[in-house]
Length: 464
Ligand SMILES: Cc1cc2nc3c(=O)[nH]c(=O)nc-3n(C[C@H](O)[C@H](O)[C@H](O)COP(=O)(O)O)c2cc1C
Image 1 (cartoon, rainbow, N blue to C red):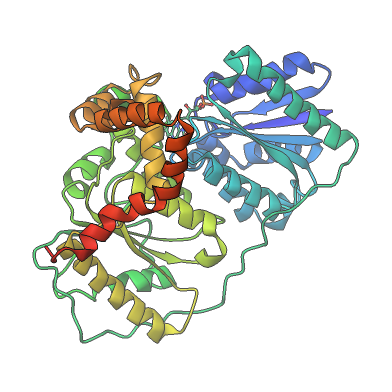
Image 2 (image 1 turned 180 degrees about the horizontal axis):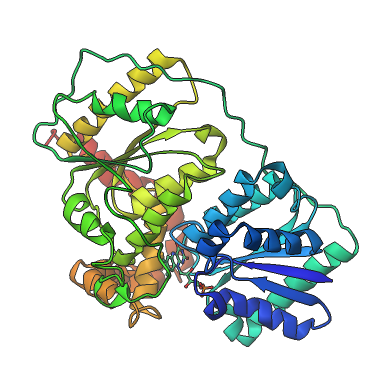
């Protein structure tokens, strides 16, 4: 069988994820495997139509396609995202090459938002009308452990059998429907005062005729004073992240001084009170240009840059049909320890409704910043902090030394349950007493009362 591996790692041959394919090939050598280093060669693919056509020829003749990629910042790398955009930009002719092909998605990561990345990839496969057999989301080091290898090989075997036996596959994502709507804003006489707070608005393109362009202008004009607006172009964002990991030592990026991104992040974003991103949905995410921006932010590794800030987004596109993107945005905000004040889209209502939403959004950002309002973090933020705390303390420490220093000085390691002296003492005592049936009977009879007792005390006490 002809198996085509589309390599989404910018590291090309040195991709860890690719080694999973090579291991599979060792076990099943009779198939004909071909690898295209898509992410690494994306610039050439964009510039040379012949090269793109050559890849498409292999897509057309393949019986099975493996999308292989590392997780980069809650999705796949911007270079691979760009390739997906090229497929859709190519129109029906290009998309039809993928139609009906059996496919799987393979990733390696430390399982931080691997589910959002795989949801995205599966939705893309559904959009391309491919036969999606499943995903394999491995921890980076999984196949180095003997006990994990059979699972990967079993998955590969299942993929080959699905192709051979033309097994049926399930679709999970409905196509996105965009409405045909042109937003015509009306300038409001009400103006929101910034009161000395710094608000930075970042946009990926500034086409003033598009809905997003007009939403950006309306947002700007909601304020009594001018706000700082930067486009990706004028911050001089040239290069995509290539995963070199040099930043792990001291948050210095290998592109420091070569383009303007890192300086912009440090000097214009990290001291802002409010950060707003704006962009159009492109396929199931924002643009690959936005992805490039967010991937480059990885120079801060697993250390949040924006603790205590307000964050929001203006998005043009059917976001409500794409909960995965909402989750990615929430995940980004919570990982950065920000408050997600709102996401305004152009998908519902008429222009007057959108005017009102934008004005209210501006007001809310200022209210929240004044109140220092940071909503309690949900699973998105709590889980990510625990994953990073454990990995930076353990296996990632020498690579991510800057994270380790930050975590140490900011008490992250104090949150290890084994470091909590009070609970250690309580647990010791209670576990000893729980050996006695009489105690257990009392414990479970009174547990609800005991749990709520301090809360009742707080509620009954005079307000402080
Ligand atoms: C820029 C960058 C961003 C990353 N983002 C994530 C992430 O969001 N979630 C995660 O679990 N791992 C993340 N990782 C870890 C990689 O996914 C992981 O190291 C992967 O195994 C690399 O695969 P590759 O060698 O095939 O490129 C990131 C690594 C880099 C360099």
